[in-house]
Image (tube, rainbow over all chains, first blue to last red; front, side, top):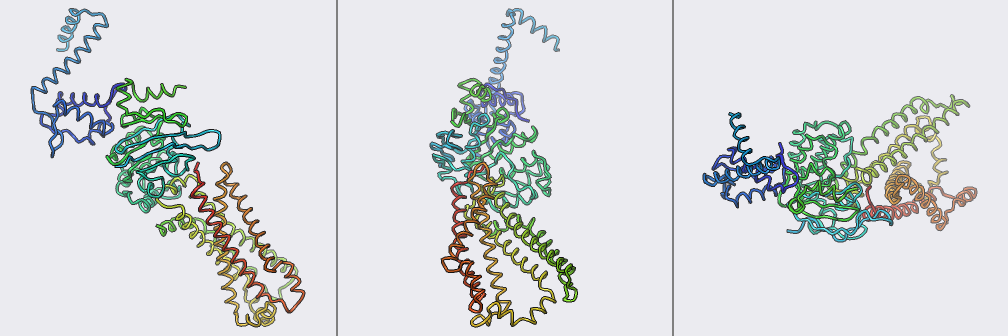
Length: 122
Length: 233
Length: 276
């Protein structure tokens, strides 16, 4: 099943996001080995060079690292993973707040609504 | 390593009035999947035929791995024309034998594996197969070679979406650093994600040569959207 | 590589030609069994004479159709394989045009020669009935005399002459194949009417060759007119020696025109072919 990628942003950035999400959500566990570039490219139905670029970028950020013999591994540095998790959460909240702002809600209203929803969700 | 493909001032005219291809200059490196995009009649097929020596250039030169098209380049170029070129009276397995007889870099095993994946009967005569199935057989033959340059003219035009996915994954599977894959199509959306680079051809001239990432980063839009803009009628 | 090519070229011809030839062979046998084999001097009447003439006409029409069919099929296969959609595969094999042409010429020639042998075989079956044979045997000396098997030609047997004729005809068949291919190739130069172009080329080439041979014969003092005068002149004319000379000249002519046509085809294939 090809990955769902949108049209306007560079593909490698979307792939990075997708893999980061997979790491945070536990599809890949810390210390796990990532599939090879070729496998991932096939899975995502994207160009192997693009996949390579995305993985290199991830490597630069430190969330994955490569070992000469066993390919790319997910970092075991919990603090880095937590940091990434928070970062992603912040991003989502940021987007959410922006949208709510467009709808004309004040900060207080947003907070109240959110709390209400959270209660219901329980 | 040599660039896999170089063109210098490549021009082809079918009659004196107009050039189907006009002064095309281009260099392509290996290890890329390249989309050759343009509306009907823009010169895509003419360009591809010139690479494969089924047309003779009016002017200009082509170098494939440093050589002009001929016997040596045909050994390393795997070409899928936009039409059915198989002798319809042959059986699928005969045509595999034919490829295996004439191309040193053809893998029977790979071909049979793919035919099996697509559930194509190797004992069937080609004329009994549907148009879509024939196209699949041809693509399998072409992709079963270990070529340096794959030239695919409209490889996904006539097949169903499921087969399309299979074909794209076959193309990706075949990707390697020493080979380049040139795909002409107007179904841009379907193949955009597997491309490194796109070439836009308009009225026989190259109007854009850029990587997909460049287009998305600089223009903030997909190749498909850009195509619609450049070729708006 | 050449042997593989020939194998496939033969295969594609083998789809039609054996059936065609066996059909003619079968018809010849039927004609022999039911018609020509039954001719006896005592059965001769106006009706049977007419029947026999009709049957020979039918037979020669059949043979002509067979030869025409053979060359036509060879030409069509050449056209389809090199210049139609199939050409997209043939032309992109890692094989030179020269090799393709050679392979197709060899495959075509094999069939043309087979065709020629069949014609001889069928004619033998149809014509050489026991009755005809006995008549010929009886008058053998007169016939030999008449055809000029005298002097230095006296030692020639019928079978030797027959063999020479057969070999000569086979060469003729090969040169016809070359001519057919050349016509197909020339037809490609008429970009909008390639098939028509091939047909026209064929007639133009054969006319040119006929004209050429008449001229060459005349140069060697063999105008057709001479034949008649020589015959009426009687004894001095020797049919065999005349035929030998004619055959030598036409063989030379055939070789020269075939080489020219072959080279032309090769040049066209290399320089002028744009598949559409």
